[in-house]
Amino acid sequence: MSFPEPFYSWRPHPWHGISPGPKPPEVVQAYVEITPFDLVKYEIDKVNGFLRVDRPQRTSSQPPSLYGFIPRTLCGRRVGLLTPSAKKGDGDPLDICVLSERPINAREILVKAKVIGGLTMLDNGEADDKIVAVLSNDFVWGEVEDLAQLPSVLVERLRHYFSTYKLLPDTTPLAITPYDKARAHQVITAAMHDYPEVYGGPLVS
Image (cartoon, rainbow, N blue to C red; front, side, top):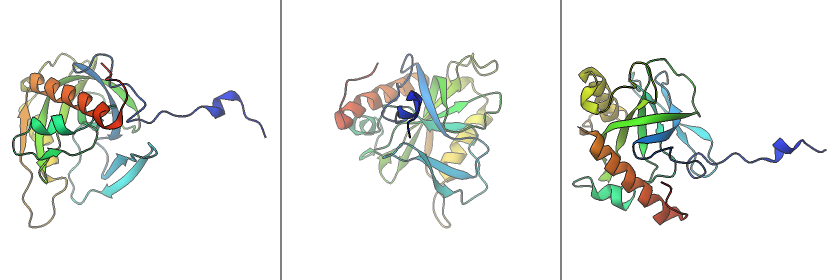
């Protein structure tokens, strides 16, 4: 049985086959794994590129924003060096949270995001930064230029989610430290340089 030509097309791998954005590190492309409505943690399968269930959330905490990663980035050696006490990066693509005024409840989508800051997270001695961005051209958040301009309660929600989303009984919440746009740009640039060092290919800029 023969199929029309589109059936022969391959879907690009969300981590390896998509650009990190139109103007990184200022404006990036984010692949969304989790929405603010999810009580299950979804994660990209690093081999086949499809979304899989990682685990149900243990607590009632929900992500306060879209959550995913920046394609063709890696939390590797350079990212690890930017976090005091980190032994290395966590070996995953660089995570990103994207704030949107209008609810977005779809996963496995790409959004254009303007970077405004980030959160330092040290997990088992590995740097696991969370970049914070706003949906590009968002009518409410689009004019925000730096993390300090966000309502403090939004930053508090992000910090609380990431300090507790892996929390087990009798364990200590992870320490989360916010940082500004300049530092976020530095982390993204480091992650973009870490990627080809491990996976090859040219540096995408």
